[in-house]
Image (cartoon, rainbow, N blue to C red):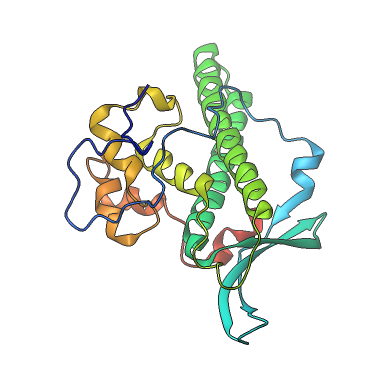
Length: 237
């Protein structure tokens, strides 16, 4: 098991840049299970969709102060059925998770089409492997979103605490996604990489830390983040 200190927090092994903002509650275990199976899109999955988060205000009854927060519209068969509360500080991470689901779903369908069109057995097998791999990523990110929703609806969203809420599932997803850790359990995270488990993944000050040693150019990095114009992809949420 990974080393922890007397407070039960992961040890801060590995160097991190000066100015790194630490999590108040460092990650000491993974709550998002690793998925090893390809996704299956049944009617239930396809009937429930989400719209981009809306920025709204919570009014404190005692002070009358307006506190900014977000809510995610939930639709069933394109009809609004409710909202999921979302702390505003997690808006960008929610959009990133949703975008990853859209991207991998489209790639999964693309490889399924290529597999069906392939005439040579070798091409068909290659496309099949790529389809299964991307389908597993779809399932992995959709599971993370489901667990995030369950966590969000379990909170008491008081106005005075809305800006301080910690969404552990989104913190974990962001860290594991940025470090490509969905195929390993917590216990196999190298000691030198414990620094990521202690850093706050949603703070811009930590972006350099989480993107260090990525073997990818700037254009490739841009593809990993949702476009600023949500209209380009929001209809697929």
